Structures are given as structure tokens and as C-alpha cells.
Image 1 (cartoon, rainbow, N blue to C red):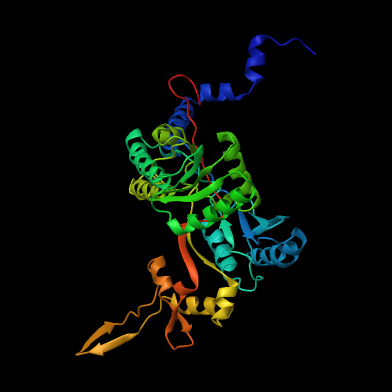
Image 2: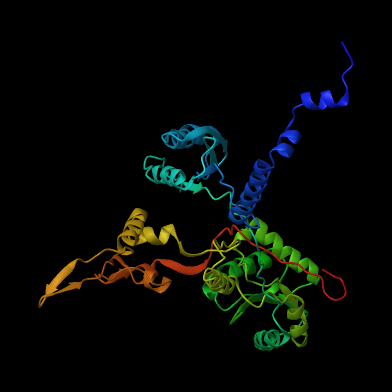
Length: 426
């Protein structure tokens, strides 16, 4: 093959660079188009700090407290899987069943960008399930895995200040001095302080049980019940040290009562020997200034305030301790009045209802009738008539049971906030 000079090689070579060099008008048009394309893409691209990426996975949580995993798998998990599979856009369903709870994961098909309507359809199908076993549920459909938490605030109560502790100490000291009037010996008072929202009757019963138990085991002699506003305790002669008395009280709670029965807002117990030392003893065990109920009200106000801010899309609260009304009764006492246990439940359920009374036409106007009967507070529960005595007098529920309003027992969430002081101590 003959040798070709450079001019011949250049004339026979064809590539992109040579084409755009020779066809300059096409190169300029392509350059302008690329620039416009980039400007339009920059203006239309998402500018969020956290891009909105559609999540195609949801989870269904169904609790059934007290049941084993095998029974939940057969009666709850499979039923949830069948209902979730009815949607045509579901690709994969897998589940995990544990003791007391069922987890079912639903994954949609690939390429789906609008998942809201599909998840809403699955949620409506799950809400329509009415054949789950008694005690199972409610069905919780969680579909907002794509939500990113941007801010978390912790609300904690400070310790009660010295002024409030001093006021309470004055009451405790006065009660101890009155109870010990005319007595002699080395006496000690085990004091349990609680907030004013706790009914005195709810703490008097366990205090009487501990009084009898302490006398029986020789911890206290000539023991008396110490009771006053926002405190209760046991005062008597003792030969034990303060730490031994507190340890005995804690062992009584563990063995005879339940730790969950202790009020979450109550202070730690304090042993007071000299009434003059009451303030120092209570300062050492001072509890929180605000109760869980007051923190719940404050955080609810914070939640409603944050929801008025436009950039905020969702606000959740964690650690809220729910309240409940507890009816404490004696089966022998109820049986003596001839009232069946099932009758109490049916009477309360039929009374505490919100029903429509219909509409009445009065002088050409429609007037809505709203029947009364729904409970507004725990005091109204005690006024329910459940029968009649042998003499024909009405028998009220408060005559048979003790009604207390408190927190959920046992408490599911008890959060504690720790911090370091100026000296670095936690």
C-alpha cells in the first residue's frame, strides 16, 4: 500500500469534530438549544432540601395482647394479607408475627409515582374488616414512611422550687407534730408525697395495707397513719435506719402491690425523724413541678400552634401518658346487693352514649334534640342508678365501687430527661 500524505488522510477522515467545524450553523443551534434545555431544567427541578421521593411500602400493625404468635398468624395476619392483596397495584406482601402483635408489609409495583390513592384504597379495605377475633385490633395502617422528621422538641418539667417545697413541708411538719403529741421514743415517719390531682382515697388503701404489714413484721411499733393534703405516710417507733425503712417499703410494693400502682407524679418516699428537718428531707426527694397531665395540655397547645405554620405538614407527640377512670370494687360487697357483674358493664355502656334525639318541627322551624346522659367527668359515673335496695331506695354506683381518675395503669410511656448541671453532674 502506497504511503499517503497528510492532506490525503485529512480529506478521507470523517468525525464529529470535523462535521461541526464545517457546519458551524448547526453547532451554534445545538449550543443554544443545550443552554436553553439546561436553564429550563434548572428552573423546573425540585428545590426541596429533602426531595419528595414516593415510598411504595406501607405497614399494617394489628395488636392482639396476650395471644401467641401461631394463633395471631392464623386468625389475624392471614386475614390482613388477604384484604391487602385485593388491590391490583400490590406486588409483594410479607409479614412478621410475634407474641401479641402482627406486622404486615405491603409493597406496590415499581414505577408508581402517585401512591396516595392506592394506599387510601388499601386503608379503606382494612378499615372495613369486621371479622377479627375479639380483643384483636385496632388495625393501624402506616403509610407515611417518606415523611422526614425535621425538628424534635423535648418538653420536661423542672424540679419543684424551694418555695413550694417549703409550703408543703410546713403542712407535713404540722401533721407530724400533732400526731406525736403526748408520745415518746425514737419515732420515724415514712412520708409519701403526691400531687393535688391524686384523690386521697386512692392512696389511703395501700397506705393502710403497708401500716398493717409494717407492724406485723416489727418495722414500726405503735404505728399510726399520717395523712394530710397531698401527702400520706406511717409514723411510729422503729429501731431501723432510714435506708432500711425505705428498702422495706419498696419490697412491700414489689411483693404486695405493683410498681404500676405508684402514681407517676409522686415523689420518692422520705423518712422524717425530727419534724424540724422536714424541709431538708423533702427538698432531697422533691419531684417535678408539673404533672404529666399539665405537660400533656402544654404539648397539645404546642402541637396546635405548630400546625398553623405553613411549612409544617405533620406534628406528632410521643410519650403522652393517657388518663383513665378506675372502678375499684369488692365482689362480696356487690354480691350482697344482688347485682350481677355483667349488669354493671351493660348499664354503663347504655348510659355513656352519644345518640341523636331527632328533629322536631316547632312553629315552622326544625329544632334538633340532643339527649343527655354522656359522662362529662368521673363524678357523673357514681350517680348512675344500678338498681334498688331491699327498702326500695335507689342504689347508686358510688355506693358499691370506689371511682378514681388517674393515669393509664400500667403506664406505657414514662420519659425521663437528664441533664448536666454547672458542675458537670448528671
